[in-house]
Image 1 (cartoon, rainbow, N blue to C red):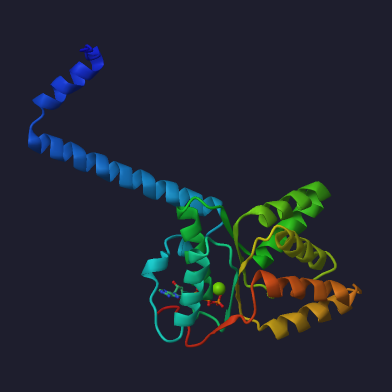
Image 2 (image 1 turned 90 degrees about the horizontal axis):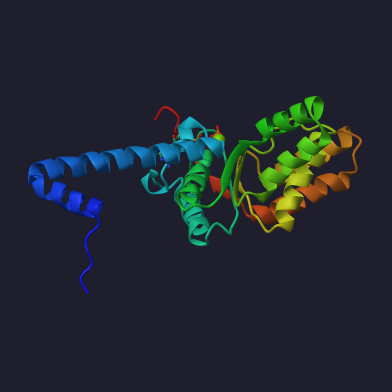
Length: 241
Ligand SMILES: Nc1ncnc2c1ncn2[C@@H]1O[C@H](COP(=O)(O)OP(=O)(O)OP(=O)(O)O)[C@@H](O)[C@H]1O
Ligand SMILES: [Mg+2]
């Protein structure tokens, strides 16, 4: 049975027939440019909302420079992506060797795949929690910790550089414990070895008159969330290279 074309479809068909091939090409190009611009904007918005700072928001995993100093770290990061972001990753090394860059490239890949991700410096997160506890309420502190505990991919940057106090140690434990309970690993770029971090937390617990078992609980969870051994990254700083 023949169906009559709708008036709108008929008008579109007539319009298309009246457009020259060059005009059509121009329209297609304009449309493709507009779509690329909108996609890039959406990507940038997602990364900003995830806390990924400008410098790392544009990093694409496939564009990372690779050499002898970082190939083991890049391979381990690729394994995280291949696992569907179910594996954790610990990268340790001196300043500027590219630890944060690689972890952010993984977080960006997750966001591109529609998987939730967040980036924070641990010192910055502790600062935010301090403000929340001082100016808001314990509920706000718990909500914030829960937000970071739930997200699928979490970069905890520069663990070990945060101030360690009676307040921050239990918050850190709470975050790591909730992620461990939820089977959500972490991506961990750090300047410290596991042993140095352990000593740091044990010492902080003693100075804060906290039970040393709190420090042990923190590092024990860490060893599973970012499985040992953490990958050592060598070489000179890539800053300014
Ligand atoms: N694989 C890479 N490809 C291209 N650029 C890189 C790569 N790794 C690092 N860089 C560049 O080197 C600089 C330092 O990298 P990054 O901040 O990741 O180092 P880091 O190891 O986290 O240092 P820090 O311990 O001081 O935090 C950045 O400007 C980054 O853009
Ligand atoms: Mg870094």
